[in-house]
Length: 405
Ligand code: GLC
Image 1 (spheres, rainbow, N blue to C red):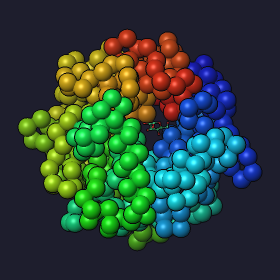
Image 2 (cartoon, rainbow, N blue to C red):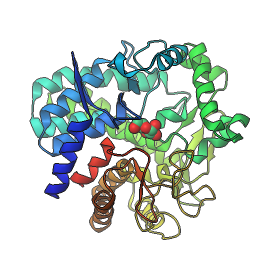
Image 3 (cartoon, protein in one colour):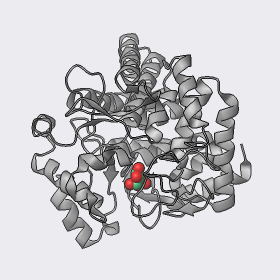
Image 4 (cartoon, helix red, strand yellow):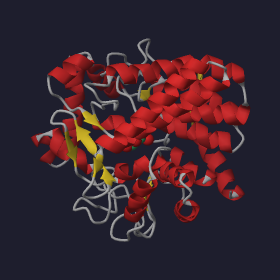
């Protein structure tokens, strides 16, 4: 690990930190994203933990979980400080959100990985006992409110929920509006408004045939989270729960491998639940199952071939959010996100997967390239995979993951 990079990471996380009565979190960026985002916060906590700042990690995760709804929904955005919201923003959110201070949508449940990390570094059994029931309630909510039919996979109701907001595979599903310039933004807000009108009632949303996708990155993180729950329940001596979550995690992993697999390409694609069909649009999500413990050798090899192909994902600064071979590939983010640039959080997830399956050299190459990106350009929201130039927001929280890679 590089200590000067860690110094810079600490400085950034402290600069983006926000404290108030009863809360502490690190905002993704100071200007555009001043609030708390679920998966961003979980990544910040992981970085803080690995840099020995377990208390900060614990506070950030506790703040996040304290805003969980009684039914187990873990909001994707939380507004702790009303002062940071303009009156227009407040009015706007009122139109979409049943509760003015938190989004009714969710994000990939990286939080379980953050809690496991806090446990591993701090060994605070009290924290584990307090936190596990909250995590459990969120994972139960996902397994009941977002699981439909015979599949073990869970659904997202908005592209925002997978965190890869504008990835090209969703275009067709977002309707005609999305084809207008900036239309995807309009389509996203329109679709959230439709969900709000149904009070975010899962059964109603499904029966109306709205956006309903079994997204690969989301489900991979869900499987990893279930596995982490299993490990943590076993630590506190709750054997039957440990077994329950371990088996559930394995079953979700198996379902990804079976249901999302496209034999023609060897990639894993999202499923449009309305038609039951795969959405064959390559993106970084397709590689995510490398993080699953149950991924067989052959499957790993196929993913590694795609990852290391210079016409697809192995560009000067891997790993682009969309492969170069895609007609949607745009190395510089233009109006939409996640259509080509390299993001450090997805690099970290894939690097961990590569290590898990023994691809140490490749994992190291991803780590080195990620560190090079932040060393030469600073901690940007994302990077041009061809030139390494940073884009989007500057001093971006989760890009500090590079310092622990
Ligand atoms: C963008 C990203 C999303 C992230 C949020 C805050 O919307 O697409 O994944 O959580 O910004 O950083």
